[in-house]
Amino acid sequence: MDQLALLFVLLLGAVVSVPVGDRLGLPAPVLMTLLGIVLALLEFVPNVDVPPDLILPLLLPPLLYAAVRRTSWRQFAANKRPIFLLAVALVCVTTACVAAVAHSIVPGLPIAAAVALGALVAPPDPVAATAVAGQLGLPRRLVSILEGEGLFNDVTAIVLYHVAITAVVTGTFSPWEAGLDFVLSAVVALVIGLTLGWGADKLLDVLGDETLQIGLTLLVPYASYVLAEELHGSGVLAVLVTALFLAEYSGDPDDVLVRLAGHTFWNIVDTLVTGVAFGLIGLELHNAIGTASGRWGELLGWAAAVAAVVVVLRLAYLLPASWLTQRLHARRDYDEEIPTSWRETVVMWWSGMRGVASVALALAIPLRTEDGAPFPDRDEIVFIAFGVIMATLVLQGLTLPWLVKRLGVRADTEVEEEFERALAVRAAKAAKRRLREIEEVEDLPEEVSERMLRRAVDIGVRISPRLAEDERREGHEQRTRRLKRLRRIERDMLSAARHEVLAARREPGADPEVVDRVLRHLDVRSLR
Image (cartoon, rainbow, N blue to C red):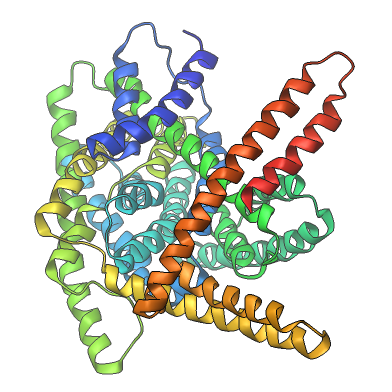
């Protein structure tokens, strides 16, 4: 098996793991990691030949962009305090504690190298948290905080990692320079993210065609990441800012095809890239096995100790942090969507899985320092990092669904339904206002006005049937059944039309471009 065949297997596994995971009640990323582990143990499967410094630039931009599309800036702003406590404070605390433990148990491990280890295992993976937690029907407030933590903690961890690596490679360290680098990295990322977001928004309006617009959205995250890294900024933060800007300000409400096609496109990208990323995590087991040759007991002991620190520290941090945030919420009436019980706090604790960023940072550790000496204990650091990743991702990922079910933590469907009802009312009122504006400038027959008014009401009722009174609801249900029947008949008619047009495509002399244009017209008609 060559590298191309291996990539095809991972892509196929990414597609198949979704329905298999749904049927088994297991997260698809965890299944892909297990697939990667199985492939790594097969002799005929080659080692992954991807330069470590390309893993983050290739995988993170589309994954971050896809994750941001499911949220909004205001959601982050509403949870800024708990996100800060997790994405910044907890990452720093975890880095320090892991560095202290690793320095004490690994003979001869320099403190700077131990800090690098702590930084690369400190951040829970945004993709793992979102993919796993999002499938379990958790309360939206928990998913929002986990998404925010996962998206922003890489910024903190990567800066700490680079500072520690530089200290090991050069043999020098300046706290003032490290702090200045952190600030400059954030400023550069913010400027680039906002600039590219604004420029992409303007370019999307110029392009017009939905195919070109969606293609641009794939390029923009990569451009934002690479440009920020070239200018010594945070590529992760730049992608987040660009994606949040486009999510907040870009998009015409009437661009239905762009929205539908873009949603489908990014779902496909998210599924495939996530599958490949977690498959690579399992495949990198080759490196860990090679490192541990003859030293399994010692290295496994070190990895277990660091994994225990990571897991236990998260719980020890979350319990008082959640209590403090709730007290502040009660006193000052903040708007954060915070955990409301110890059960939700436990679920947040067990959702702290490590993943893609940790693997990429571990593999990107330099082989040598500036003076030509080997990087101290590099093999040991990589093995410990993979031990932590496997322990958190596989163990926690496989048991999180059971834990959620056991604790009975579920989404508040009543709140979601109430919000959906409120949106339905607003949509119906907006349609009525527009109808009145049209009636002021156009002379509509009375029967047309009444029919349009009923359709305006139906807009809201179709979104939330609870808006209608009992009698009207029954009438609406009858009309809905009748409409479904008519649509079923129309779908059959359109299907017959499409079959006929496709048959014409195979006839001699048929122009395929004309056929495809007619077929596109029929497809768009089917969406109405």
